[in-house]
Length: 114
Image (cartoon, rainbow, N blue to C red):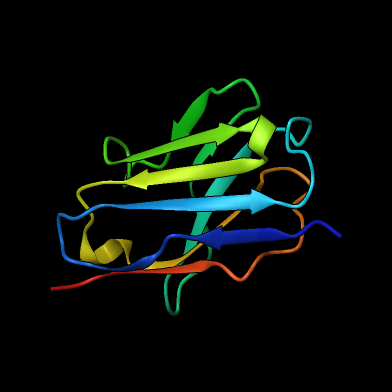
């Protein structure tokens, strides 16, 4: 069973930055596109950014220009650099692959508040 461990969340003021990390228990080189998802209270989980094995990235419109996704296949790690954070970015953030998703990790809480 693949394990995904997310970390790096926390409480930050509007306009601040956070860097999230996700480490997988297996090699992610052959996992295909991987992404960061988030789920706010009372809302559906949504995909906010994804990256292919070769490094091509895609972003949801609401985070474009503020978030940067990257991956290191050798370290089996995915990152999400989040800048210019807004209160509406508050959510639990998860990583997973886009196709044939593995079991979800515990996620990491991001709270943007003054």
